[in-house]
Length: 597
Image (cartoon, rainbow, N blue to C red):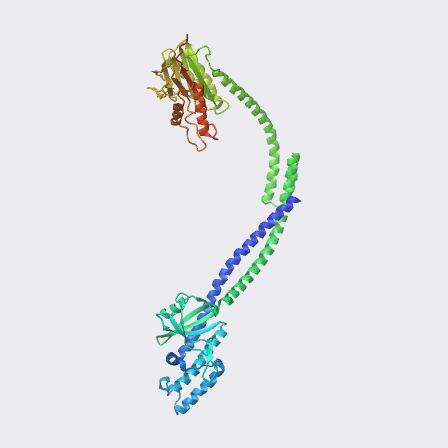
């Protein structure tokens, strides 16, 4: 039950996390989407309102132009009461009564124009029309649920100054009769950065797409601007403000409604999915797990049939049940076979262990090899890459004054290479002991190795015969690494064959050529296989012959055993944790200055 609960809880947490993440992402996207949509709706609504006001003003035509011109010159003569809405009818009556008295027989707008009025007539007309337009602006703001609607005109466009002509939110002052009147003709600097769209509307003569965002002592608002043009003359700009707080509140409310609906859908969907997954997935998996656990404890192959019982629907879990059932049946067969294979592997391992010891016993491994002679100091090592290797070395006295040394490398690794190694070592030694010349011995060995060489293996070899009295060395090189001589004066010399020949067991009838050189007593001859310079580190970089030479130069005075150890230590340090790739074989021989008697 514990596993079932934990699995069910995990699945529930996954779906809940998914639901929460979906809600969060959807909320953000919905908020930005609603913000964008509502801003477009606000702009549309404000454009409609300002267009409506513009059309009303344009109907007045020249009358509005006269009104604005009069305001520019005589705004100090206008006293608009704070309660201008209730005063409109009185102002209108005062104006028309004055016309009847001052201009008998004439009708304003028909036989009488604004320019024909006297100063008092103009003042009364301006007062009446101002109160009218103030009420129109106020009613427009209320009808469209706006914060402010007002009209301004630039008093100095270069200096970015405007005069507020119609603004229902103007402050009040005390009039000549002691009543509260509106403070008209406020001149204000409108920052072109903060009021970008105001000045764009004025300069272009078109209503721009966008808002000015104003945050001052009157509140935080979006302002939409529409230029007023009558008879081709730019007069001013109609501005409409809408509260940002109200906009944000509306957006948030809409987003929260969408979020609530989405959350409800996701919660119901999540509960349904969790219930479905529990019944159709979790319980079947838990049942399968119990059967498999029972099998792991009891190893009862009969459980294969029990697992099929929980298959259920023909889906992936059903297929998994069938696969586990088949796997248990196959596993039983495999375990039986594994026991046989393990026994066989143990037998082969034991035989390889024996082969390793046999190979080791076939190479000279007792040092010093000639304890009765103090004129020879010789040491050799061979580290196979596998249990048995293809490298080999050999050394033996042909007679009392001639020492033969062999360093060879069979291509490939493992048992096949080891078998060829045994044959090659035996052939070379037998031919030399029988008294054959070095070149003839290699030719004979080559022919014999080519017989029945189905594995197509070959042998690189360096074979030399050292005259222990004179230090004269006759050698042949069958595709092997050149030898080095470590001079007693500290110099390291590489000995290259003038006519190097290919490896043994490659070309039938190949004639091998000998070469010769001399060493002084106290010099050391160093032989090796390609496993030394081609040792690689974990970065797959070679040890290289150059590094080998540097090590040899540092140990020219060492005895052969110490020299070989120094080279091996340098390789081990360079290779590090990398596994050994090839057999590593080395031999060192020094002819001491003390002669054998």
